[in-house]
Length: 97
Image 1: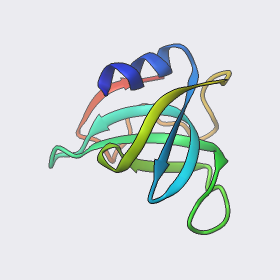
Image 2: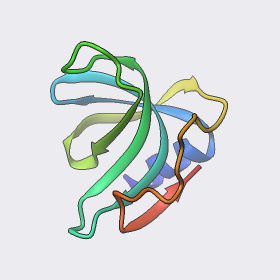
Image 3: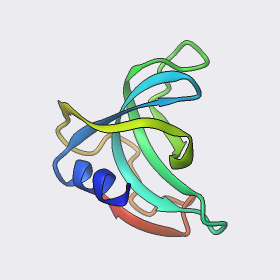
Image 4: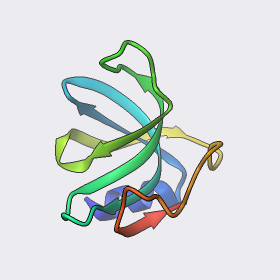
């Protein structure tokens, strides 16, 4: 999982997955884990669905809830506004843009 996510970031590829039963397409920006060891991705959602009916741009996704995770053929240009490589939600960061 770490390799897939970090390689997508290196290549500026979006990730696609199902989360809470909904399809998501995101630009991954930071991948790490919390103090409790939960793996997370901070990503900018660019397509798909959300529970609220809107695409909230910045989202924090729990890796263990991602189903059918894959690198998309869709790419992106770089970081988005308000990007923070020192994401405070993560105690240990595996990779980031």
